[in-house]
Image (cartoon, rainbow, N blue to C red):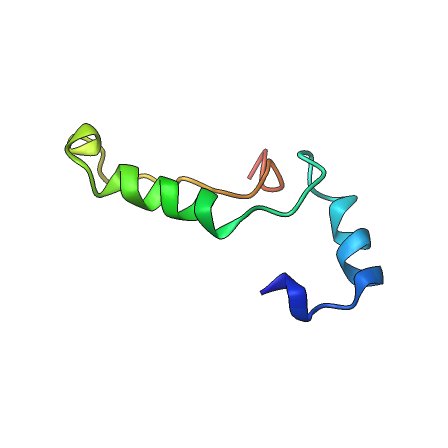
Length: 58
């Protein structure tokens, strides 16, 4: 998704992400995989941001 953005815009976005990098599809898939697994069977109604810390405090 971010590949379509101009390089200048990508670099500007990094200023707002505490992890200082763009997340990967594999990182998002890892969270989805965990939530779909038996290990997460007792989790319900939770919002789990995969955003490099960008949404901290919300």
